[in-house]
Each structure stands twice: as C-alpha cells, then as structure tokens.
Amino acid sequence: MANILIIYTGGTIGMVHDPKTGVLFPFDFKQIKDNVPELQRLNHQLTVHSFDPIIDSSDMNPGIWVDIAKLIESNYEQYDGFVVLHGSDTMAFTSSALSFMLEGLAKPVVLTGSQLPIDEIRTDAKENLITAIMIAAEKHEGKAVTPEVCIYFDYQLLRGNRATKYNSAKFEAFQSPNYPLLAEAGVHFSFFETYIAKTSNKPLKVHKDLDTSIAVLKLYPGINQQMVDTVLQSDCKAIIMETYGAGNTSTEAWFLNALKKTIDSGKLILDISQCRGGSVELGRYETSRQLKDMGVVSGFDMTFEAAVTKLMFLLGSGKPIDVVARMLPLNLRGELTEN
Ligand code: ASP
Image (cartoon, rainbow, N blue to C red):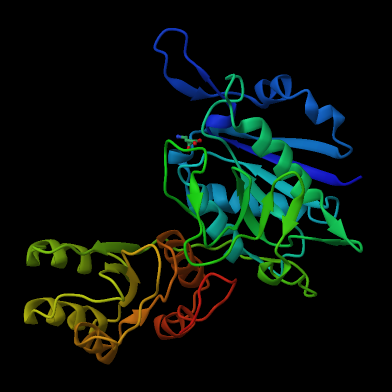
C-alpha cells in the first residue's frame, strides 16, 4: 500500500459544461471522485490537495509551478509518490519546469489529465487517472520504479521534459520525439528501465526562483528586420531562436549582424529547431557555422517547453549570463542529448 498525494490544478479532466453556454469550465475534485468509484478499490492511501482556483491550464504560470514544487517539498517525506492533475494544454511546460526545480528527486511525480471530461461516457480520464496513481505507487525492492517527473497519457509514460503536446483531438495528446517512452500500460505494465532516471541518493533540493525575462524569435522565410529587432531588443536576458532543420538560419548580413549585436550587448541566444525530431548541430552547414562562431548556444534536441523552463530556472539561479550559456547545452535532467 502506497501513500499518494494527488495535486489537483484543473484541466478538462474535472471540467463540466456550463448549462447555459455549453462551454467547459474547471470544477472541484468532488466531480472527479464521484465519477471514479474505482479509486476506493485501489489499495492505496490517497490524499487530495486542490489548488484554489482550479484552472484551465492555459492560465498556468511560473508562480503556480513554484506552489506545486513547494507542496511536493513540504509533503516529500510523508508520500511515496505524487500525481498532478493538470490540463493538457500546458502540461509539458509544467512537467519540464518541475523537472528542473526538483533536483535530486527520488520519488515519482506523474502528471496526467484528459481530453474528455471525466463524466463523459467515452472519457479517457478514468484510465489516465487510475494508471497514473498506480505508476506513482509502483515500487521495486522498496524503491520507486519511476523516480522522475513524467507525463502519463493514453497508455504511455513519457519523460516530463521530453514530452510535447502534439494533438488536441486524439487521446494520444503527447509525444516524446527525441527520447523513448519510459513505460507502456497494456494488459501488463512494461517499464523500460534503461531509459528511466536512476534513483537519486542526494537529498531533494527545490529551486524556487524562476526568471521569466526571455523572448522567442521564430524564424520564417520573409521575416523582416523590424520584427527581428523588436524581439532581439526587447527587455529580456535571453532569446530562444526557433531555427530551421539542424539549427540553420538565414545568412543575410542584416540578420547575422543583428544576432551578433545582441550577443555583444550581453544577451544570450539559444538555438532550438522547429523540427520536432532530430537535433541542432551548429557548424554542420555554412548557415549555422557563423552562429556558432558568434556564440549562439546550441539547445541540441530540447523541446520548446524544456528550453523555456530551463532558461527560467538557470536565469533564476542568479548565475552570470556566461555561466548560464555554458550550462544550457549540458544535460541537467535528461532533457537533451548532446551530440
Ligand atoms: N484547455 C484544457 C486545459 O489545458 C485542455 C485539457 O485539459 O486537455 O486545461
């Protein structure tokens, strides 16, 4: 029997339809409990902490990530695992953020939600919830089987900082394009041990300072100088540049000069690819060699979600920008594959 803390933040899983307008809005946990009598048959001690207010995850923000991390910290010893109920829209941002904030995690933090509300006949919520609890409770020789932040959705367990929401209509809402699944739930559970993080033997350290001074520059053929300058010159410390293919950009002089000027002014530029699969390889093509030479930082195969939250975490640590630039391409929590 395991002790599991369920942290309810909101999301479709617990939403109901407004009788007048028909729109979905978040509702309290009782709604979930009443619709899943199976929870009582689980051989685990379940405690629920509901956030107030309960939100659609489009309203998620770093302040709430800190609250979730604090809640896990203050309950860390009493519980064997944590299940975070969350809307799927920004779930991969929250799971990425938590992975960086919870250093030395030795217990499972499993995020889940659903595409259909729990009271709908075809809902995916029941299976997601029940199995997420079972995964958070799973132990082998007294140790948690999945001691990391992960997402459970549609029979698949994904590493939290590798996952990305790719589909708003399929029950399979998430993919992990650059990292294998951690587990699959069929008739039996299959845990893919080689890909699951090893249990940390360091104490849990919770990082609560996140710095949101970042900007995002997504490239497209025809992007104009004014647009580029507006982003690069905005009030930020770092820019995530979403590039083409293996990290390539235009080689037009005005564009490269603008990047160089930005780096020389003390800002950091992180290069991640618009491609879901594969990795940034600065210097593979002429169109990225110049980026490497001027000090653009490679994000390798990080997801956008991991890049955003890793930057907030590293900038929040108060380290100087050159140290942040050196740490970004390092694999801190299994979020990237260095090449
Ligand atoms: N809009 C919802 C949310 O993210 C979608 C979901 O839960 O799947 O809260």
